Every structure is written in C-alpha cells, then in structure tokens.
Amino acid sequence: EVQLQASGGGLVQAGGSLRLSCAAYGFSFDDYVIGWFRQAPGKEREGVSYLGDLSATGTMTYYEASVNGRFTMSRDNAKKVVYLQMNSLKPEDTAVYYCAASSDSRKFPPELYDIWGQGTLVTVSS
Image (cartoon, rainbow, N blue to C red; front, top):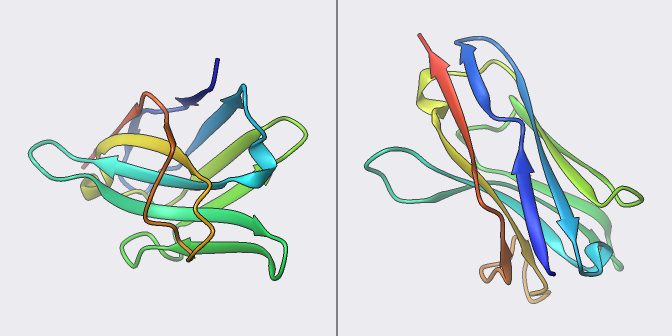
C-alpha cells in the first residue's frame, strides 16, 4: 500500500524543539519531493518546507519565511524517512503537520502532491 506516515508531534513549551518524521511505504521514495505542510485551527493549510533530490542540482531545500532559520529538513533514503527538526518553537507553530510526496518535477517546490500522510499534532504552549 502506498502511504506516508507522519509522527513525532506532541506538546512542547515555547522555545523548545520537536522532530517530526515522515515514513514512506510502497513507492520509490527517492524520486519524490517531500513537503511538510501545516494547518492551524480555523486556518487554511500552508506549506512549511520542502526537500528534493534533483538529478541536475542535487539536494534542494526550501523553507517558508515563517520557519526559515528554525526548521531543518533532512532525509534518509535508506530508511525512507524524512525528518523535520523544529527548533525555537513558537505558539503560532501550533498546528497539525502533514507530509506529502510529489512527483511533479516542473518546478521546486512543487505545486501538486500525489501522496499525503495522516498528520501529527504539534502544540506549543506559551
């Protein structure tokens, strides 16, 4: 079965850290760009960060301005897992975090995603 499983969410105080994991099953993980998205209560889903191993340029990452400098993505292709290290967390980072995989190679970060994980809740207390 093709799926992504996100995990690692929890409750943390402002200024703390969490590491989210996104495990891939049933597809060629190496060929996909992985993105992290989040949806806070009452708000639309937004992109957070993206990581892709592109043949022409190597590994590329992109971080939205709201998390740039605080969040870091990494990837273990052997384990088929992508990580999102989140440091200096703020209450406004509270959201359900989703990972998604894209085979869209037209641009980076991609706009279209083929596979979505189930989400993991991150709560940052002030």
